View 1 (tube, rainbow, N blue to C red):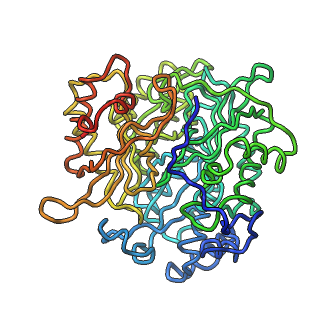
View 2: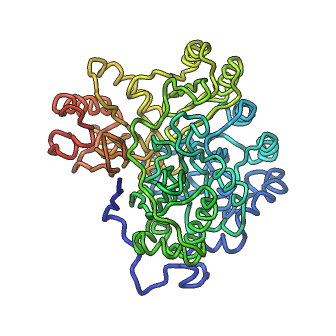
View 3: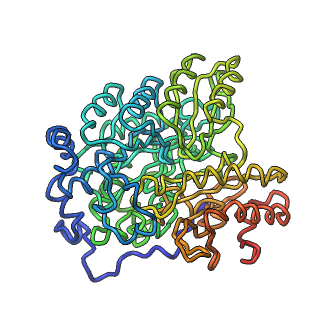
Length: 565
């Protein structure tokens, strides 16, 4: 299962400083590097608590507001009166409201009912009852005031939750298998490795200034449920013929405007080695990553220059001090890794996976979810990298009642195909980078498709991902139908929400042995209003033309552009 790197990723040109600390020195080459060098961003929390929370939004200097605040999980949210047509022409000060999006860091997606209640309470008291489940297993709250942050942190930390390094040029949340420790077919439980990484390294000032964000994924489940091909580092559960269960190491994935799939280094990593291997890869990025241009600063660009063999050699020789064993690749996922539905745990109980619509919930819903879980004797829940929720430890005789109760909250254990397989980023409602609405557009599209396509029976699901800008937070290049938001000109000459269409992307499953990025169809752009009609049209063509067992991505690859319009 080899992920091929697309040619569109190119390392910076030779013969000039790229800001690699161990090659070019540590002199900052742009303003982002300057403010990180001037004061470690982790220090901003003290100023938030001691100054800004007391003196208010207008007391915050720009390098803290649009820079260091991110290390505490805080972004200014978009002003509500600015249209998408002005996104590209305005600066952050003009686009920003005096409120924040707060990202609660949930490594491995694991929360207790007590923790969920605290998040819910913060949502209802401080965030106007907003809550979104991101595809990074975080919960995002909106309408947060800087004045409330000391109390918010006090409440979160009282139950073991943090926002430290939830954003910023640092090691962000560690994606983990949502069924870690409970799945009957689990290869290895990644929980101890995730816990060690978080306890030892998150908030460590030695690795808090990286060239760009650093994304981690760790799973021991055969469904490959953490989208390992698109993270900076992934540890994927495998069984070594001599050494037993451990991890296969992948490096250098990432999407956005220069997508690249991660590559295997060919190494086997034991559970004992895993935290140090992770730390070594982070430090390679810190020391050798490109810092001159932010749009070429992700780890994927360094891997494109070095290749996996050199990367492995540097990791072993300069950062570990010992060789890693060669190891096997993971098998393609035998089934979907979103864990929606009713599934047996290895202890005889069940977990129930439910789909909220495109990750949008509320503090009220999260509190009711905690009530429902505790009524049937569960105190454990998990968020997934697919904007889904799991309730763990459900007794067999409580499954049906819980499913019915959660459905009443808009959380579906048996959702329609498009309700299950559609994701959307935050979009223009709150995001300063977005051009178009995503959440409401996706919700309306799902409802339309449930009616329009009720007569179409698909052998395999079709994923539909909507993103408000080119940055691909909703992973548009790895969806069957990926939609990149942009402003179009309507028939009346006025701007309207629309999308560029990407087709045929996907990650490795039994139906698709290689991950791949979607293709764009020349000139194909669809307005938000026409989106349900377009999706219906292309899905019906696929249903009529597909061979038995053929995936949507395989059909797209062999189809001419006219069939895809």
